[in-house]
Image 1: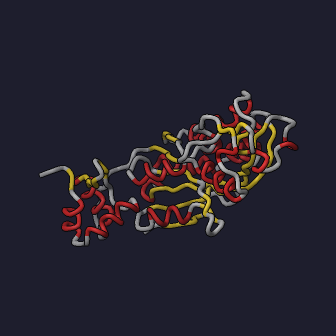
Image 2: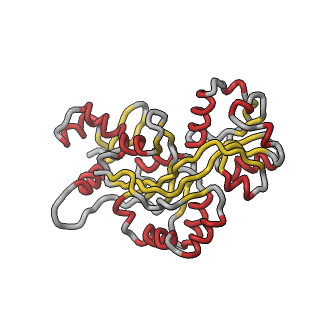
Image 3: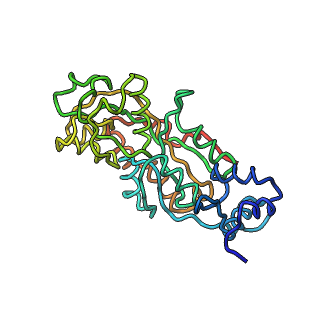
Length: 291
């Protein structure tokens, strides 16, 4: 018996149409892999997934996710994970990368800040579309001030994205929420990528600020907190909501509960007060609850 199920075999197992199987795979609801253009479903993972969806008494035997935090890099979150001693590792490589890895079961939580141009909101649509039938919860982490990080004293010459024309700009990787938002703002202003002197992309908020500090770029679309930390100039453009998407079972387990406990501590409150550009009055507010 093969360790993988085909789309047809999974459809027969679930007694649904193959089209529905494709929908489940696209939403990340069912564990799957893609090879040579074909979808394959690990038999053991599917069995565990069905167990997770079962009701009634008795323990569930689902595959346990590794204690890893995925998604978008946030300096305050990164610090809190380390200082809390919760035992959660991190792999930050962008909002979209985090959602993909979370869908594959590579972590217990992922951070994201994805702007919804249709509604002006944040994150909910992306989570609902992919994880609406999954046991997950989307909670607020913080509102962050984002804008143009520039060299000290040059703020008057860079007041908006229109002023980036011909300037050296350091972008983020394609999977980063900040890159998607910058592309949206540029398009709204009628500016093309070719109008900018784009530098090689960087993968963290800190690296974006460092590129300006080291004169490798004239501007970066980054966080006020990093501009302040590196004593750089800052031109505010928007506020964004950074949320945490968490597997419901992992929420109640010791690593995540230790992390949450630290976020309620005086030490965290003091750090939050001294970190400019953050507002976390809604920390823990639920914005979406999956099935």
